[in-house]
Length: 182
Image (cartoon, rainbow, N blue to C red):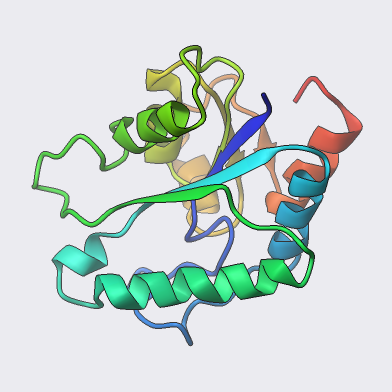
């Protein structure tokens, strides 16, 4: 089974240090919706795992989060595809939950939904070190994009040894579909 877990903010849509708080602020990055459609048409199951501490902080509600995800679903429907599942962590950084990345709770939940017990073939695409750390925790294959917080992650240079870097999600998908070794 071919499974890809995508971070949301900075990978699929524009990111902001002030949080994505509304449907209007949820703006897909160029080529990201098309890239997801290409993955789906190539037979991949595509999931999203996203930290959403803005809920905990009171910046937006779960209802607003679902409306953002519905906007993505409508865009994907134009390509006759849909996301296989979305996991989100509504907790704050100090809540010590198991789901907030860099912990791997959301990834493990996705693997369970997909019926996987071996996680080594799961591909993870993120823009921050915590996305990559969560992937490494379960022995999944992490990939970094330069969009969102990706450039900052690269500048810090911590924990990136052996992790492939792509310009954006579209670049990752192009490489993946051209080369099955990604």
